[in-house]
Length: 287
Image (cartoon, rainbow, N blue to C red; front, top):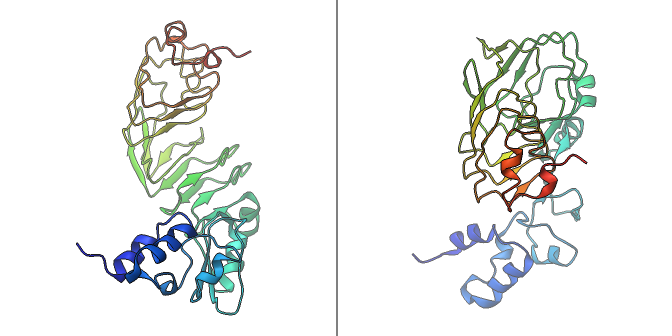
């Protein structure tokens, strides 16, 4: 397959830095002028590299610390780092685009308990102490729900999550590639119109789509006796199996590159795992 101008432009969108663009221009004569064809910046720019992209009309801001240019030829900005909902509204008025929008506790107090459809993240403690909140609809755009998001929502009994994958009486499975993390409030009785029953399970199946077991994931699951960690798991968080007293056997696949502090402290398989040279001592002792 022979690469043309369009194909090489698409490929160069994924270059790491300005040197890759320069090397292409110098090394392949027929692709000279590739940089000038861009009407947006595919990488962060500084005052020097900005001069190499003379035809930019839409400026992409990838990080909050990126250098921003407003030299008269730029008509719109696309912001990729996470911004608060209030900031998004300001940018929207100016015709700019925000790709990652967080609904914070401050936003919720200003704009209410209905989550706007543009939101991609619910911030830490966003709905904390909303004691009169009885139901919540979480739109499909949400990819992450922050720490203690629904803490002390004592009246919250119903939650609707558009991208929920599976519910059973014993387990709640989340669609990990879409919904990264969620802490279900203990008051919840209904999800997507179905009654749920939280039980102290003795077996748990980790879907192969999961790549990380987060902090405190199975903390104090005192009746958990069986678990299989798939090779897709790369990292186990702190206190992940803390006080899983009946868990007497667990496999640690070679795919795991990081294990958090106190991960197996007071776990039923603690003595067995201490014999595994791959597991650091800080995974067991609290002090």
